[in-house]
Length: 358
Image 1: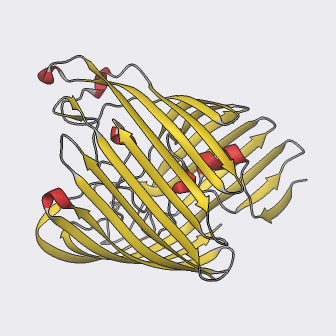
Image 2 (image 1 turned 180 degrees about the horizontal axis):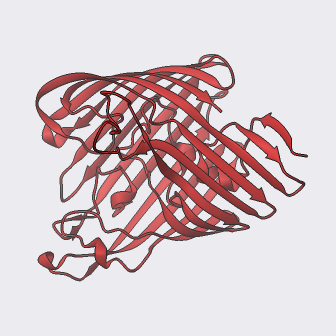
Image 3 (image 1 turned 180 degrees about the vertical axis):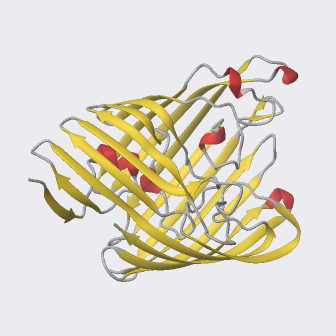
């Protein structure tokens, strides 16, 4: 007979580094070797934006510049997510979806704000883990999820973070990880249809009571469109990311990336190619989280990406406060600014959020 219990579920260390977002869950113990866990969270966001960058649910590394300043309000639940994990001995399967899928178009069933406010599921993670091997879609091996700041805005300083999920094969040996991941040449003058060599990511992790830090390297082959001369170009990127405990429960989080990181960092702040030439970029994020009490905390965060060929300069900063009313329920408020300096454009935002962890 199944034994059902609710527990604060911490995934095994390796899986936690992969998934990051899994918190609490409901576990069904099938037998000594098998278990099934359901988790996720419900998150409601109330957002006000003002400026000459068009409002979005959350800031990424780019935006649409408006002819004149505009203000808007947006209510959404799309960040809510649901996941399932199945463990059978050395084998783990994990699937997670959120509600940021593309809208259904046409008729009264369309995902719009006129009638139904429909939201479509989107696959975030779908992978199999067997001992030291992982197969499927999850965070790129290049990404250290422990360094993401706690924010009301979906991802915080996405304009400068390593933030990418894709299909891969990963091998982990102690502190060392190596993976081959889905190739996709991104940018003007690129031809992703000719991509045939997987991206290669290597990573070395250090961790202890003090926190953790990861060192990553990225090697890629980019394909050039015939209109820009054809052929291929090599791209090499690198990064250091960490989360360091400071005073009490406080922590400092950072990411630094350089070289040809392209689509791996900044969520469209930088591209792989600009008119068929390989782009160089530098990205930095920093965040400090302070606990005012056991259940009240604040984070100050900042992220900036600068590129060479496209001459982009993208910055996002924010300040917030969160209060936990129970282990599962918390409320937060955040304000900040996103700037595209090279286009003399920026927008302020204020956001209230309510989150219940399942």
